Image (cartoon, rainbow, N blue to C red; front, side, top):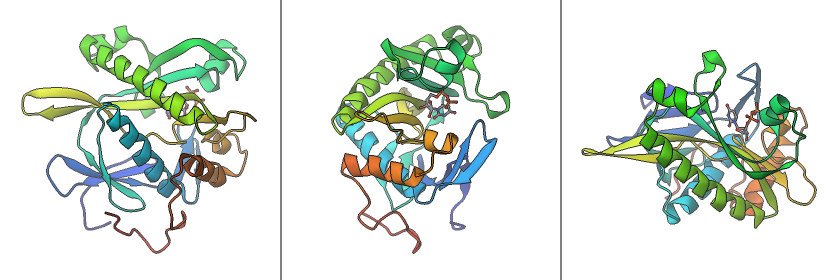
Length: 254
Ligand code: UDP
């Protein structure tokens, strides 16, 4: 890893300079944090599973014309992505009440919402990612009205597609968080989906039993965290053939 210049280190991922200009290598760690990094831990094999799950979901989304930063997976823990200018927003979509929505508004967890809700949070760890409205976003220049329209349109398509995809494997997509970036091609700018889509930033409940299959198992000390992530990958039909314990180090996968 020392061979490449590190561009950014986040809580669960590291970004390195990519092999060509305009590309980056996204490395998935096993580290997990919750409650604005007040709770820290390691989930063995999480990085391998999230790399694979995110690759699969981003690829499926590309196939239906949702542009995103994913180019290809490089090995067990790394993927090649397009370098984008990240829009400092966390875009949360909710189909069923849970987490902060239930807490703030007193809506019982598990209540199906009459329609999907999109919320925006300002991506700023020091401030604890506060919820913001479109007024704040345009006022402070984080994104334009046109950008927000594009983000909402893409988010709704992602939600419809992923809700169906997960339901097909017996999982309810309760809520999830997306991030978007600006991709510059000559003079043109496109908004594309960035970051990752994995059990780290989705709430996934077994459709029959309601069992949690996501990071809430870590947040709420429910145990069997790695097993839950593995079960999501298994149901999607993408469990890494070599297993998740890649102690040998990354192997190049073409
Ligand atoms: N989420 C995330 N990163 C964050 C905050 C939320 O990925 O910094 C995801 C979270 O996993 C869940 C959804 O966004 O799927 C909604 O989270 P919520 O607002 O309920 O917050 P939480 O309960 O996680 O504090």
